[in-house]
Length: 529
Image: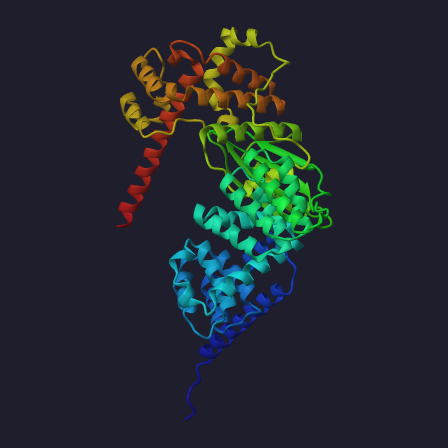
């Protein structure tokens, strides 16, 4: 009797082979395309719709096979996966002797994205020729930057993760290669506000016997804001001239105009706001580059990320997505420059660290504008400020200012708020919202003295900038209320200020809401047990 064949098993095997071939074909098709980062991420999204458990093993297999052609796209896919399960197999591949140093260098970069510090790896054991790999990697980077200078922010992002000593050593290594293509990057770093790093960049430029390096050094000697950098750049320029180098013109950004669009967001409850700037890419036809800066009223510039090689459709889509969760307003660029000067003054005064990528975008801004490190003070010339301050009816209405969408997440974030919520004895949000100063005088007074008054200057600044934003958004009625709240912040006692009372109640409501949410989660978990 003929044995029964398991047709289902054959179908399953054939299906898996077909699936694998489909993924490999897709990866190979990406390898040959000149995609933007945006397009690449879209492509990766489609790829991983097939499932991490299918895509990741195939990517790892290509690395084990020592496929140098596929390695760049495969490593990008493993970064995009953001799946910690790749760490162990990648570390195993690193110690395989039949895998080339070029592939291992790419794997080390992927591991870095997952938080593995290359300094913690035994690189001398892993790589056959560590020095050559480092040198080749840097030369490839120079080549990429020369083709597309908008890659510089990504390099600065990596630099941001290094220790100060490693940053300085990295710049010295760049100088030791004496490669003219490195001038694109070294110029940006030499104009940064970080003196120690800028100093290394100037010295590195002085090692490059090139007319372009001489040109940049003379530019630094004349335009750097740091007197010590100007003097050092002049000395290095003189050394190059004495060695016979003749200056040659180097202005790769000469065709870059002012940003074609700029946007700012409302101030959120932590004092943060976003600033967007969009440039027409001078190197690529009909492509845009933009940066999103996060600035804080208390800390200055705190975060920064940029994207290049975008189409207008992609940028508009990004702005539309952002506007769904945040109030944003298109603005003139002079306003953005003023806000940047204000934020950088805060960085300078507070000593708060600036993300390295920002120095690239700051350099682009200052090609056409001068950023003055000074306080930005809105003028509110179309308002009678004295009349608004003395308008009792308007002041009373500031109690409800917190209910407007622009102030959605304005509440006090401090563990002590929980204690005050218990003191209120309110068991329901409705009860909490009906709290009054007359009935809870001690609560309002103590809350204000402990949690509001120590931060009063921050709150005042947030109100001032919010009123400015609302005025620019043509929301004059809400702007007037915000101005009234701001102008009366000198009220004594402060706990009698209607806006402060509204802020306190909102903070207590947020705590009660969170407690109720946590109780529901615990209750649901207990039912599952």
